[in-house]
Image (cartoon, rainbow, N blue to C red; front, side):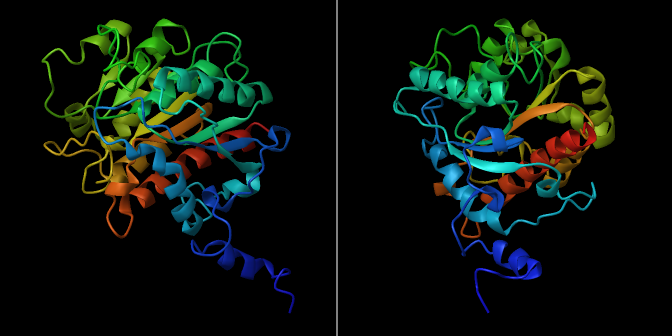
Length: 334
């Protein structure tokens, strides 16, 4: 038998082996042609926007390309196979010729994603530290953005931290850092904080007014204590009420998860339990039907992961939910 002409059943099993073939995100074709793509999977190997903690966040895209190949192909709860609903390609990594200089690199990231926006490609990205979300939103939301029709996006922000510093001019030299992006995308018109919400904030803090900047900007906040009171269903209802029909972007900082679920992340908050994976997945699945224009997963540090790569596998699971939400939306609109 010609090994290049396997049956469809054989292909399914071969493509689901992480140790076989050329690694791409979820075994998608590596095709950089934006005209042949509806959902673009992108690696953003950037670590210099959060220099206060581990610098190895740029290794996450390579890690995800390895482990995501063995992830399941169909979404059991939604009853869909996202790869069959639309064209989903691994576009490769953002080119970063100034990777060691954050405030130049964020401009390179923005320019890369502007091409995707103009082509109507919805990105799902694996970072990288959380400074990548700012330039992505600068490219695909707000004035002149095709994916939002020129309007600001609603931000659905999973995180243990606010990332909305605007009272500091820079973060150890980085002006557009992982600590600042949530502020400048709001003040510069790319995100509508009145339609946006931050989820899972927790832990002891450097100052007692750490949520003040989010409140000043107008973000809604459901911290982990309020989430424990509300539960998944009521939290989903609050998100949906706030976002409405506004084009929405999901950013998922892995430190919102409990360290037992995702130990290999930057800025761990071990003193207060974070979301379980069931809670996080439940919240994501509750967003079905919203107009999700893009998403990202950030702050994984593969060099800290356990031997079974639990954090990489958890990241894969989160990214799969994001892909499925967008694929389901695109299929519903056709």
